[in-house]
Every structure is written in C-alpha cells, then in structure tokens.
Amino acid sequence: MHHFHYTASNLHCESVDLAEIVHLYGTPTYVYSAATMADNYNRLAKSMAGLDLQICYAMKANSNIALLRHFSNLGAGFDLVSGGEIQRVLAAGANVKTSVFAGIGKTEAEIQLALENGIFSFHVESEPELARINHVAGKLGVKAPIAIRVNPDVDAKTHAKITTGKSDNKFGIPLQNAAAAYAAAAQYPHITIKGVQMHIGSQLTSVAPFVEAVKKITPFVEQLKATYGITYFSIGGGMGIVYKDALASGQQAWWDAQPVEQRPLTPETYGEALVPLLQPLGLKIVLEHGRFMVGNAGALISEVEHLKLGASKNFLIVDAAMNDLVRPAMYESYHEIVPLHRDTTRRALVADVVGPICESGDCFAKDRQLQAVGEGECIAFLSAGAYGFTMASRYNTRSMAAEVLVQGATFELINARETFAQQIANETIPAFLKR
Ligand code: LLP
Image (tube, rainbow, N blue to C red; front, side):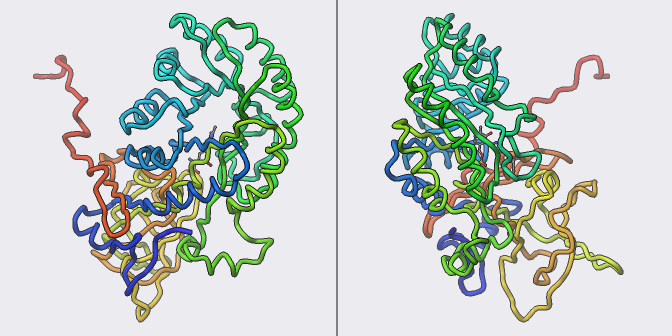
C-alpha cells in the first residue's frame, strides 16, 4: 500500500499533484511520501507485536537526512554501514545509540566515530575485524558492544547480486565457525558480546527463506544466550516489495484480488511466521529493513525529450538516466512507468524507455507498453524510493537529481538539484599543466 494514485487524471503523491512539483523543481526529481513511510514502519512494528522490537532502518536504501529524521521520529534506529552514514544520522538530529554498524570493511576511524557516538552494537563480519574493534576500543579506554554476523548458508532465492546468506557470499562467519569466533571475542578485553546477527539477502518475496534461516540458527542463538548472556538477535532485513503492479498495489483491493499462494510478502505474513519462532528466545529482536520501508514510498519523475519512432523499434528518450536510477541497468530490475497525466483516449505505444547516456545499458525498460506520451510530458518510475538516489552517480557530468518530500497536501524540497559548480568544486588543474 502506498500513496501514489490518480485523481482527476493526474498522478498524485498523497494530496499533491506531481505536475506542481515538476513545475517548481523540474526533472529528474525523486518524490517521496511521508505517509507511506510511516505506514510501512507502523505496519511492520504492529506485525511483530509481542516482541521486544527495535527497527533499525537500513539507511543505505535512502539516506536523505529528512527521511532519517522522519524514521527517527517514528522510533527507528538505523542499520548503518559507514562513517558517512553515522554523520548523516547525526546531521538528521537522530540517534546513533539505537543504531547498529554493519559492513565487512569498517576502518579504524569509522569504528572510533561509532564508539564516540555510543553505537548500540557493531555487527562483526570476520575474526580480523574483531581484533580491530578491540584495538580501537582499547585506545579509547572503552568496551565495544558487538554481535557476530552468522552466515546461515540459506538460499534467499533472489537476484545473485543481492543474495548474501550463502556460504559463497563474502558476508558473515559460517555457522560452523561461529562458536569459535564468539569464544575468541570473549577473550578480548575491550569487547562486550551483546548479540547475534544474520541477513540472508534483499528483495525476498516469500517468507520461507527467513523461516529456514531463523530455524537453522535458533539452537546456536539459545546457546549464546546461555553462555554469554546475549540480549538481542538481529534477523536483518530483506523484505521484498511489489515492482510489477506497483501502481495498483497502492490499493487494498489489489491485494485482496491476489490468489493467496501468489500474494507478495506482507509484513503480516512475515510477522505471523516469525513471531512464534522468535518470541520464545526472550531476546530483543532487531530488524534491518530498508527497501520495504521506502521502496514504494518514492517515484522518480522524468520528462520526455523525444519519442523516436523506428521501423523495428520505438525509443522513448527521457531526461532521467542510469546515473539517476541504476537498478534496471545493474540488476535488470523492473520499474513500472506511468504518465503524470493519464489520457485513456490516447493510443498505446510500445517502446524502449531510455536515458540520454552514451551507452546501450542506459535503458529503463525494453518493449514496454505505455500510453503514448510526447516531448515535454512527464512520466514516473514507481517503486524508486529504495536504492534509487543512494546509488546515483554523476556519470556524463549529469547533476544529482532533486528530492522532494510530500506530507498530505504540503511538500518541501529536501535536496536541491546539484549545480555544475558543486560538481567540480573539488577539482583543480595542477600547476604543471597551467601555461
Ligand atoms: N542488513 C544488511 C546487513 C544488508 O546488507 C542489507 C542490504 C539490509 C539489511 C537491507 O536490505 P533490504 O531490507 O533493503 O532488502 N542495491 C540493491 C540492494 C542491495 C542490498 C544490500 N544489503 C538493489 O537495488 O536491489
């Protein structure tokens, strides 16, 4: 469920006509719904009722400081992965003390910054990392709270580039080696063992792999509680969202119409399957969902430059490109594309929807059927709130897109379109080339 819908033929986010945002801020622009994010957060929290729960929003999905503040106001901590993300949490006026620090290559400086800001826990991915955290904590004269990321070797049945819980992925410590890693951690003078963590992958569309992974490591979790008195278990993130029927999935009626066995994963299904497995552990449960929280809360708005009609193919050339939204080029992912102004009297068009970047990979959709749209009209890429702006680049010296947050009938620019001067601000011509 989300808040992108047509009212009087115009696509709206909550009560705001997206044409109004385009008029003020131009394109390409990311637009986010505050209400959708709040609904997602509250629905997830409710579905896990009965647990001592901490939701740590995986901010890599979208780390705009306005969104971080919104999630913080709702009660979230953060799953963060870099010193930069720690600084974003601070810049948002949010709390590092309820946040967890993941990632396989934390630097000494990043570990120090996390400790100085009272991080809730480090999610440790290897034995050498334990030694490094102990060393930095020792230098600061503190004890570092940790959980070890255990790799359960479960197939998440998702895209190869975003599966993480198989034994051949670079993440975590294999279950069979985890007891030894905890024993080593217990020997370090500046480490406090606080919990255990797992994360098996992203965009999971069924609950079965989560259940399998939790069941697989539960005996070990119980053992850790008995031996080291751990107080929390993070089961990671990974809940998938709807990409194919993105617009329709904003309405409850669409969900009701889906045959039960084909229904996409919902927080309710997730909670029903997992709460009974987690509750008996008597531990705080940490969740690290990113995509589920923001994916369907965002759209990328783009203007049509040209419709190029060909003998064998049509191309709809738009002003957004793979630098703005790289997911289709990188993961062959699907994003629904809808016009800002719907006109049912127009003919349909089959076209490749492409950006202006000079490579064929700059393609959002192949042979997509759309309402015919022409130069100057706008379209929206739906389900673009997660891993959209955060994965953007400046390739082809294109500026980072603008971002706008909507709440009800109001909206505000939360990230101005980057200027050319900002793009080259750190570049210089060395003296030896000046003549
Ligand atoms: N926790 C850990 C340890 C993770 O590595 C990730 C995501 C998450 C939580 C959040 O996963 P989520 O709930 O968002 O699925 N760029 C890719 C997704 C990469 C996910 C990386 N790790 C995409 O656009 O599909």
